[in-house]
Amino acid sequence: MKTKLLFAVIIFSAVSGKIFAQDAIAMNFTGDTKSTKNAVAELPRFEFRASSNEADLSSVSKEMIGEHALGSIVSEKLYLLEAKYTYQVSIVPGNPQTRTMVRKPVIYDAVRKIERNLKKQVKKGEISTEIASGEFNKVLDVAFNVLTAETASFEKAITETNDVNSLTNLFTKRVTLIF
Image 1 (cartoon, rainbow, N blue to C red):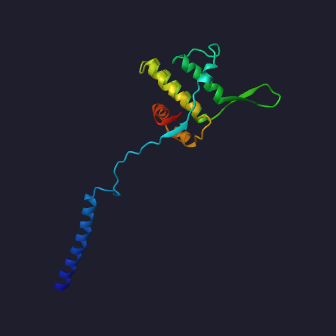
Image 2: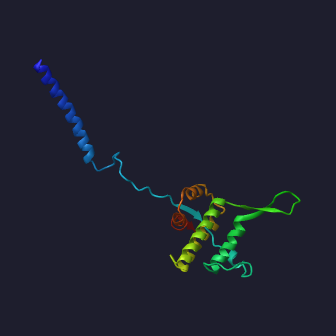
Image 3: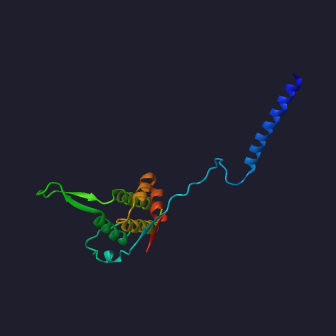
């Protein structure tokens, strides 16, 4: 009986020693492991083909646009944004009433939200007018160039973004326009 008990203890310690040795090796291995480390997920980046909108900007006269808190160039680009993203549809044939429809409403609403936020920050004195104007110019350039592109993943990223500052960063830092 004593020999059976001794034999069982020796086998148990040998088996458990191998298991603990495997765990020790796995813990000390610095390569690719299945350990749960706090890995920072890299945010997706977007690339779109771009073209210059100088011809469109030159066709806008000063009488067509109004004043804007972020400058005259922003005012011209906002006029073009309205012209390119919105169109009128008659409600009932024969009735002169029309309804305004928006192309890519997710992008259009995001641009408007960024504009309100930047104007509010300038008014409070949190950022200067020049910085806000520069950021919003980049946002408007992105909006012009994605109008005809396939933007399903970009629109999904916009809807998943819940903060206006991250939305601004999405338009200005994570989108690359290829001229």
